[in-house]
Length: 218
Image (tube, rainbow, N blue to C red; front, side, top):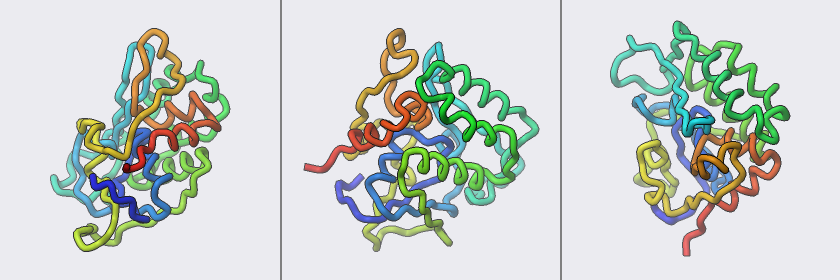
């Protein structure tokens, strides 16, 4: 990732994305969500990591399997044949019911695990707007009308840079800082979990923590 800090960030969709993902919304006033990249398994597009009593717990949204291999993200449909909504909310509630701010936010998040969205993009985008609003970050978004070729643009391209299997050292602009976590005393602090881990534990202070996680280029 280039240390340049252009106004525009290009981002993939993300399900309750990690702290790293949301620092980019503080760094860049213009955010474009890519709709025309091909869907890839085992990315933040349909998964997140939360902190449970036994350690890091991954949550994945199932998608319809019969779709072609190279399907645009905008066309990916959620599979409701599996009762993932109840499982995800039960896991989130179990993990964070003792966090300081879970009860403050729970009524805003719980409807997402009751109503149905046909497309993964729509579900993630609605959640993203709620999270940005909760963080008191401008939630104005733009969307690509074709696959974005940034070779001739001064855009910060994070589409593949923010990935569950990519080492955080590959992003020199992100430096996670510890904050309170429900199980940290027993399991130690776990960095770069889903943004809800930060939000439920730090509440109104979450935005400040995000700012502290931004490493400015020297």
